[in-house]
Length: 207
Image (tube, rainbow, N blue to C red):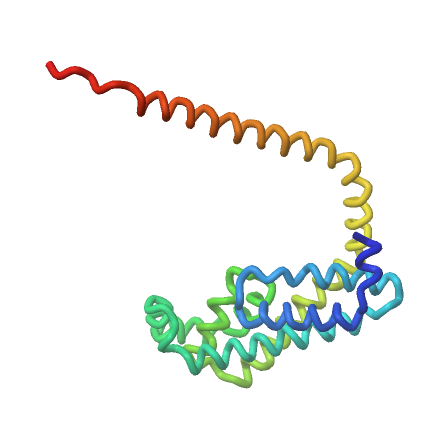
C-alpha cells in the first residue's frame, strides 16, 4: 500500500482531495475524504508536496462545497423533504441559527451528522450570506487543518503498522472466511433438504 501511495502523483491527490472535500462540504453523506488526505500524508513525508499545499487544497474544496450547498438549499427549498421544509421555515430554526449559527456552521464541518442539516438549514432559512462565508471558512480551516496535520504526523506510522500486521492477520482472516463460507453452505444444504422433506410429506388424513 505504501509503495502504491508513493507512486501516485501529488497533483492527482490534490485534485481528488478537492473533489471529495467539495462533496463533503456540500453535505453529501458518506464521502471518504480521509483517504486522499492519508495518501497526501505519505506524499508529504516523501517530499512530493507540502503540508501547507495539502491543507490549502482541502480547505478550498470544503469551503467551495459548503457555499454551493448553501446556495442549492436556498434556491431549492421546495424540493427538500416536507419535514425538512417545516423545520427550515420554523421560527425556532431561525432563532437557533441567529444565536448559535456561527458555532454550528464551524462544528458541522467536522461532524458529518451535523454537516448536512446545518448546511441545508442555513441556506433554506436565509442565514446571512456574509456570516456564512466567514464561519464556513473557519470551519473548513479547522476541519481540514487538524485532520491533515494529524494524518501527516501519524498516518505513515499507521500504514506501516498495518503492513506489519497484515501478514500475521491474513491466515486468521482466511480461516474466518472459510468457516463463514462453510456455515453458509451447510445452512443452505440443511434448509434445502428439510424444505424438500416438508413438501414431500403427505397431507394428514381428515378426521
